[in-house]
Amino acid sequence: MPVSPTYRPDPRFPALGADYADAVEPARFPMARLRYRNQRWAGRVGLDALTEAEWEAAFARFGPLPGNMPAPLALRYHGHQFGVYNPEIGDGRGFLYAQLRDDAGRLLDFGTKGSGQTPYSRFGDGRLTLKGGVREVLAAEMLEALGVYTSKPFALFETGEALERGDEPSPTRSSVLTRLGHSHIRFGTFQRLAFIDRPDLSAKLVAHCLETYYPTLGDVGPAGFFRAVVQESARLAASWMAAGFVHGVMNTDNMIITGESMDYGPWRFLPHSDPDFVAAYFDEGGRYRFGQQPNVMSWNLTQLASALLPISTQDELVAALQTFPDEYQKALHALMFQRLGLTPGDVEPDLEFLQEAFTWLTQTGVGWDQFFHDWFCGAASADRAKQSPQAARYEEPIFAPIRAGIEQRTPARPERLAHPHFARRQAVTLVIGEVEALWAPIAENDDWHTFEIKMADIAALREALDFPAPRMHI
Image 1 (cartoon, one colour):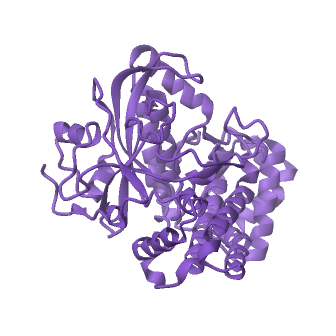
Image 2: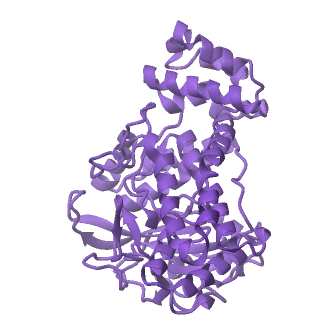
Image 3: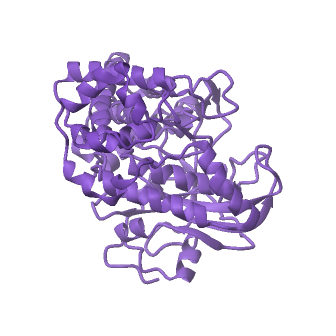
């Protein structure tokens, strides 16, 4: 396999031993038709030179990558699902396939979705629908463009099976997805170890996480590790809020110790500001609604703290957990101003301005993404805002204090406005109606044209915003 000189395999997780995962066999699919290839990230991990046949062998058949893991591993974990503890879960349709370094020296995992049954599949078929795979590609690409620390969709193959699902017209088409992520160690990984009363394994895993994902911290022990996870998780919650994103299933088994967003099922982007906006049709009580996400993240961190209690002290863990509100506010301040293309100033007046903006957005119901598109870099976009489809709303008296708050602040890198993306009157959005509209021609005629247009629009958005990569530990 012609990997480039920048390919750096580094399979760390298998060295932990057999207590954390189970070796599994990938499913054998009747077909492997490439639907998405992330050549941009392939270059960053030294796999851009793979031929089509080699790409299929690696990411549809899952033959071992050179110098990497000899067999995939289905990870063991538990978790709270909609607030109810479930000890009967684990990697049920995915596995850890390989680990390698990117061009920044960061350890990344190849994980899968839809790659077949494992010991944790229970009654599931271990498969992923093609629509589910397409939705995950869209969500992760859009989130990356908006500056969210997210897993990266790497490869999507259609696999030629007919699946029965209760939430899609069935039979429906099948796929297998490979994603690139900074760790697959979940809050639920530690919850399982506490549940089976193995503090020795918890301590070993903490040491692994510190050495592998937080090496700059040194030997700070479980409480220091937890404090770092609190900080990164606070930033993740704030980044979802700035992006107008509702994850939909914030179960503890979907929370990663590096503060990375992953696993996109019933996600939604806001059409307009609504704290009660719910992504999942089955979230009848609105547990994971948009405005509740920071509180849920704090609750999830409390469960992780409980799992670490056998190897730490309550006082240290509580002290770390109590940093969450400040860390969240600090991150929200920075990320909302990033989204607006403005330079942050003093925290207190900035947060007051952001609260006024949130209130105005909610009261008026204007387009969420359209507002940020129209006013990117503040006063430098005043003439562009006059051409907006919602320009009339900016002339209303209720908007006057928001406009003043925007225009009195300093634009951040206003030269970005020269990008052709900002010649658009309409913002690039990814609301549910658009997702369904681009899926319909795929389902009916295998027509991917609308999907390709949307992917090109998202790529242009990413280039135009040019947000710095989220702070990532090496």
